[in-house]
Image (cartoon, rainbow, N blue to C red):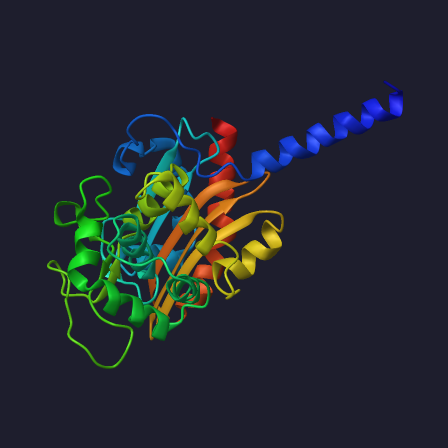
Length: 301
């Protein structure tokens, strides 16, 4: 083998390795997936608190339960670390809970309860990427509230549980009319806790939602969002080579965002729920500090 061919072969191996390192999800770990509540890391928690409390506005919002944060360090899939603030406090989350509709739809498709058609797939992509309310309402009507609730309460995933503050909930069509099915704890129609949103993305990474195949399909639908605001507006510059899997929401003073970030230097989940007139700007301003916390966590471990 000539020297030029040798170096070209080495280069190809390096490129292929880098590609695999950047996109190995779902990771498909063997055995039972550890609940996110058992992954809380004290060092990461302290780093998060120090960073958030350095900003007086954030500190005040946290004290008044107007700001909830959840973060997950995925840099080592065998040593996942979680931290959160007000993370079991359920808040109105606007369009973010559409991820629960996506999950219920995939579960229904897997179990033969919903036909896997081109129309369904188009509505799922519209619902997530563009946050289209008509597509979301069509999916709710196809599934029904009982199905969505049953999937969220499933013991395998526990994305809604009254004993730990609730979680993800969809109890109203994204339209003016229709019956409501409010959550039992607070009577909210579209709600979330940051811990359970983190759990949703974490379980996707682990291939634990419905099946590894369906987890991968959901990741594909969540990837490359069409709306580049809030978290994504900052991540576009901060991590241009990373893949972003994302869902956000806004209504009046309620702003939410969630992102799974997977790239050469970053593998993590960040979630924020904010109730504030400047909530969208708050979500933007949170990205770099949360990134700093997660980079520090990776360096420590």
